[in-house]
Amino acid sequence: MAQVTPGIYEVQVDKNFCKACGLCVAWCPQDVLAEDDERYPFALHLEKCINCKLCERHCPDFAIEIIAPSEVLMIEDILAEGA
Amino acid sequence: MKVQTSFIVKEYLRPKMLPSTWCGGCGLGIIMGAIAQAVHFKGLDKDNVAMVSGIGCTGRMSGYMDFNTIHTTHGRAPAFATGLKMARPEMTVLTVMGDGDAMSIGGNHLIHAMRRNIGMVAIVVNNSVYGLTGGQTSPTTPIGGHTTTAQSGSFERPMNLEALARTAGAAFYARATVNHTASLTKLIERALDVSGFALVEIISNCHVLFGKMNQMAEASTMIAAMDEDTWRTNPTLLRRAHLPIRLTSPESPSAPVHALTEMDDVEDESRTWRGVIFERKGSVDLSKRYYNMLGRIREQQRAAEEMV
Ligand SMILES: Cc1ncc(C[n+]2csc(CCOP(=O)(O)OP(=O)(O)O)c2C)c(N)n1
Ligand code: SF4
Ligand code: SF4
Ligand code: SF4
Ligand SMILES: [Mg+2]
Image (cartoon, rainbow over all chains, first blue to last red):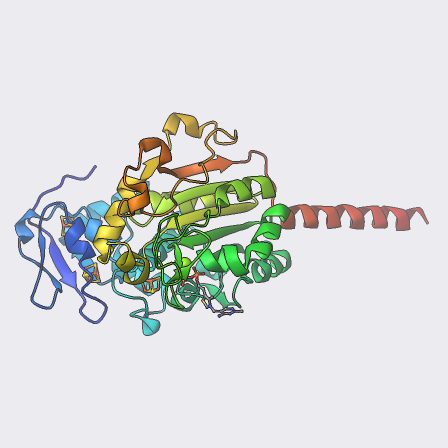
């Protein structure tokens, strides 16, 4: 498994796709995400994100994405190839 | 492993058609993501995959996914898919239906597709109601479940699709939920490996209709309830999945029922199983058997002609 370092990820929410349903917020195990006044999610505690992608998996509208720094992406590519 | 969201959108969806018309929080989008990932992990060429859907909220999925797609008539998706598979046996066929689509109006087509054991992955999205038309009772509405046509709670016995599939002759049956997203993908992957009719029942949420009438108006509440109301199949029993040992009782809920008064104490035994329910070993897809037979007949004819 790749080493998980909290706080090196970026949370991207596409408001054109997001329907403010709250599923990502409900499923984030690290309480990274919170709802704004319009119920759209935003990263309140980005430093706690562990890139588990539960938010992505539970988003029915492909509106949230966790972006890893490039070196992490490289590790993921290698892992994907090996899988 | 999770396929990057932007990659799913770019590769397996039709971004111009998005966002979907589905209500915010509807599990159908989660299912769509799981199908894309299963196809990806299986290394299938999307141009060699067909999605055939019926009518309903579920039926709309074929409009959003970038496979070869047909949006057919209500209940007839298995019939169209049968024709497609017979004409193009090399194609991977995904047939997507709602619970009403598959079991009410389309019950007959579903039974015969299972009887023929035609090679396809049939995805039945079970949200306990007719979503598109306004939340009427469906064949899977649990006893006590309130719907727009059962205001005091349904008292009909729900359909046991699992027992039907087993007796009709399906090769594989798995039950997944939109709560357990990783296993949802995995179970679709397993179904893609099957030669013959592989059914994946997916418990999904129609929180705006069924949920709202059953104290689960929030998508997250309704999806969370699926964890309490289902029970994962014992992995050691999985090896014996071809034996009829885990028939879910007809009274078992195929929907979250913890909010329903009649079933206040959902005991472990009455929970609905999720995971691989049965798998018939040695199953061969009808289209494969057909073309094998055709090959044999042609060979015999050739041999007969040579004799002359
Ligand atoms: C021949 C015919 N009869 C009835 C209808 C009306 N109708 C459209 S969708 C639907 C039921 C949909 O329920 P389900 O299959 O559970 O799909 P969901 O919307 O819940 O995903 C009905 C009765 C129709 N479109 N065509
Ligand atoms: S990846 Fe995991 S920890 Fe990070 S925001 Fe998403 S759910 Fe929360
Ligand atoms: S799950 Fe997706 S659609 Fe729902 S609030 Fe989160 S990002 Fe938006
Ligand atoms: S009506 Fe129900 S099934 Fe249809 S999109 Fe809305 S929540 Fe989903
Ligand atoms: Mg339905």
